Length: 476
Image (cartoon, rainbow, N blue to C red; front, side, top):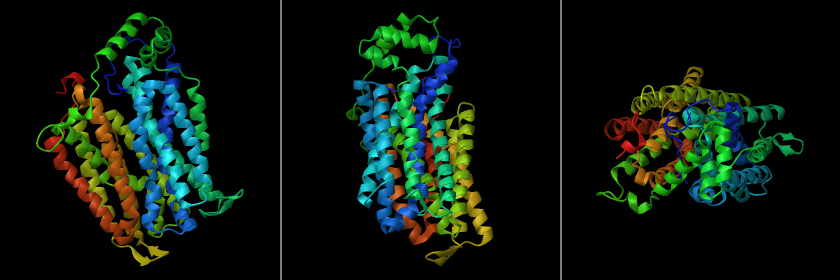
């Protein structure tokens, strides 16, 4: 399945406002619910980390494997979603993802052993991987060309909103349990409710998928051209030449070159240079430690002496900062360009991470009796928020924009697959190593992330191309 999420917003087709723009927005928002679940599921575990550690009496290494288990499912889900969607359609894939999300939420909330919880995390991860591929592709395929850029941003916005909502829900549940992650509410512990509440948006995602049309691109591919014309009129306006649009879609699909892994090979180091740049972007995006904030922030603040209820509130506040940074990136990515925004982010992240590392070096005490001096505690909190802000306004958005634009058309699909796989692997590495690194030396862990933020600066300056204002066909 070829996504056109990064096609120019003003390219081809009818540029007039569709007859039912509100309906188009509803369709886009319904598809973006997959992004919301992506963000929600990725972050909701944050509130349950310490309770799971206590409930199953596990060390940091085993705990990290359970937290990171979802990423294994993500990799498989992302790898299979495209081909599956080309066979059975985008809507059916959304419905499958909804079922996986629902099953994962119920199973994760009612585990009888640690391996059982890990299994449900993998199943939920498979749904995340599918949603991360299907959502952007579907939105691009149903969006009127004149609105495609803005509607495509719904997916990223939904992800960061999902992260924020999961933190807010976790905080609310914790308050109902009097600040105890293992406090009982209606026969279940608080952390079980945190993981189980995802049933609500998961079921809603499935129900909404029955209310939106199939992608015109898929309908053309299976010969249902009359239905494709009907959907095109529905989303692009009744005044369009639906016959011409169907011919255009059919011609585009017939002329596409299906890139393979072999097409990426070349040069002295295995892959083509541009593929290595894509892998580098993906890896740096994760090695700065951003997912430590979203997977472990509540645990992190508790590890330096902040009480559980306050740590959850700080995690939610950080998620709001993430939303603000994402909006800033969406406003400036086409105005400033990709490279300047990435450089601003790298410098800001390095300074913020270095400051946090300094503050955490003042941690005193052992076991449950750990604290930071007041000044260093405030400094660490502010630095963490600035880190999230600089990441969100730069690398959080820019990397996906660049990966969609920088590869030549003949290798774009395969190169994107390799870069995305590299990102999941780097994400997994950071996720499984943080608890052990934190136990070893929290300040040292943040110095490592600072080092990678600094290293990303010469990488951007020397190797990353600027794609602002260039047509996709110019990427050679």
